[in-house]
Length: 112
Length: 110
Image (cartoon, rainbow over all chains, first blue to last red; front, side, top):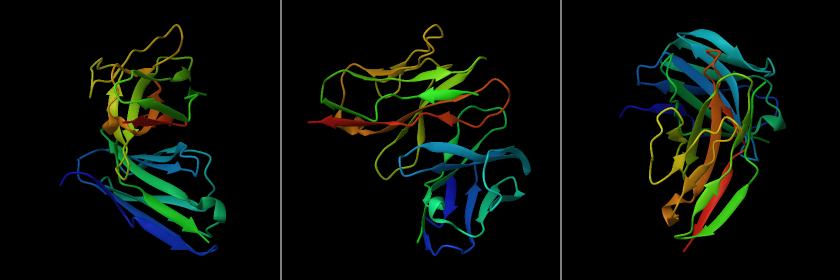
């Protein structure tokens, strides 16, 4: 099944903890992204990687650190989780020059 | 900086009625515009892009550069069209990340 996959689907954790979300795509794409969807359903870009190289780093706290071990994976590590980090995080991928982005199913993070 | 505005949070219509979801953008260059859709419990997926000028599931959208709009239209709504719709753009700077509007929830009632 060719797709963008994310794990875990749900993540519930306490404030102050460190957690990671994994993303993998088997579409052969060069570019991967992380988006955050807040409680009002607003989607905003966080990071973009092209061939393991960071291309976009929006105004995101440095508690968020993306890591791309290879071009098929883009993981998101979050340190010292805060209540405001609660959101749905979407991974996506596309060809480097392509327009269509393919999205993962999302990871719902709840910080208590 | 670029911006996408979707003025309606919720649009409720009856089955068979025409639908228009509004989208306006601001960007000084030449953007590429998209509509993405998220059905209940499904992932976000591309519905339309302005460069392809095609009709998908009966939906069309025309880029109006004078009005900086990219409204999504369908002449006869179906219940299965109920979903969250996002207008988005990418810029001509090579930055491929999508800038999304806030989304419009379309409810088609029987």
